[in-house]
Image (cartoon, rainbow, N blue to C red; front, side, top):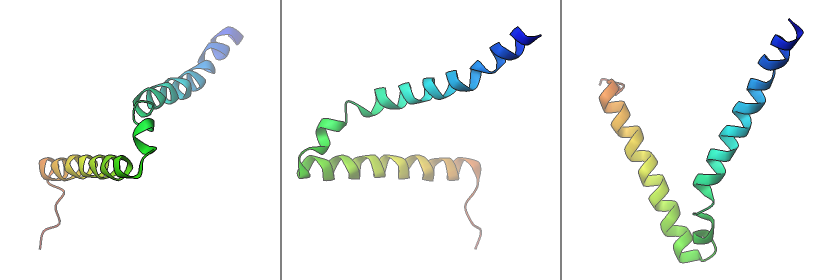
Length: 68
């Protein structure tokens, strides 16, 4: 029974490590773009507009718009 709990206690650490690895893999190609102000502004605007597009699309698909 001790081995079972030992194995189960490893899953949260694995989840955190996996999540950090995925985030690092996604962010590392974008880091050189933030070294120059022009590309930093363009990259920031592109990321923000992409997140806004996803948010608006999900709100419309799920019917979460406030009824007035």
